[in-house]
Amino acid sequence: MKFSGSIDINHSLEKVTELFADPKYLKEYQEGFDRKELLKGDAGQSGAISKMYYKNGKHEMELTETIISNNLPSSFEALYHHKYMDNTMKCTFIEMDNGMIRYQTEVEYTRIDWVMPRLMAILFPSMYKKPAQRWMNNFKTFVENQKKEL
Image (cartoon, rainbow, N blue to C red; front, side, top):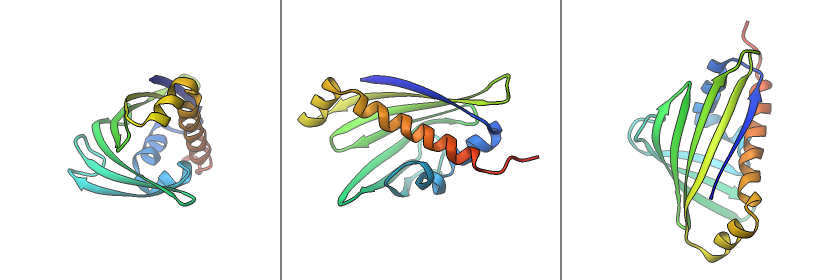
């Protein structure tokens, strides 16, 4: 399953990608994010491997992030591994003529090994798309609430 999304952000490319790249801000726009722990490599750089922890009520989720390429401020690509599924996410940041930054994502689920999530992906693909778009919307709000640099 593959899907994409985009949103325009009213801030500088430098600020958008600075906030995107810093894991201390993940809590600001990803519901349930708890923490990120570096396991291998240089934090935020291509080849780095980290554990990401999320909590939703009593449910906890652990992902392993492997950064495929970090070419910020233009793009960032990573592989996310969960015991039941894998997906890649590529984020691209484009300066537009009107001064806005277009934040685009492409997400591809390459493995879904559990019956219920696989069935949900087939019958209700929006269950995977909506959270990704919500996080983009949350990120836009978070970034735009930061003071504009003069």
